[in-house]
Image 1 (spheres, rainbow, N blue to C red):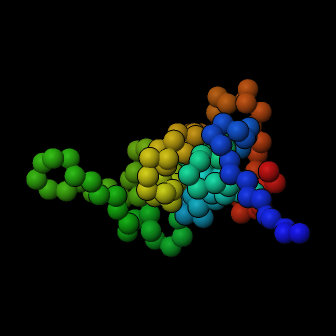
Image 2 (cartoon, one colour):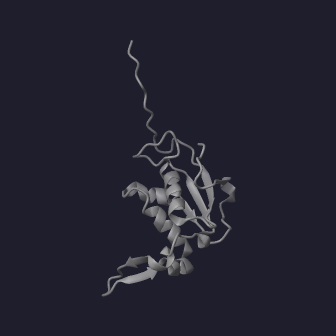
Image 3 (cartoon, rainbow, N blue to C red):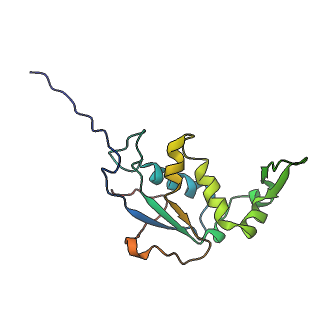
Length: 151
């Protein structure tokens, strides 16, 4: 008698999607972004499958109150090229004042896999600068970042 182990492979749209709410008030950006990326990928579930989007939706509020340790807000910069000579640069602090949602979105985006599935995962992230969000109808469950999520 041979014992065989069965591995479950998730199929698209097989698992129900949950909605989680994260309050970014006084959270450290990198630590918060890594936890959010795990939820978007679905690594918090026992049925995680790398080639299938098994993650859940995440709503982040108070993005304008997120912080970084040390003096990174002043010293680190976003840089981009717009087609003209000279590179555009902006400190994290200036970006937070101008577009606070972009800080969280870009931090999470850089922690997701670099493939087409990451675009689908990132579309499940909803970021708002203030404390209000329009997703109350989805029965959003508030979670504490840094703690285990029961799925």
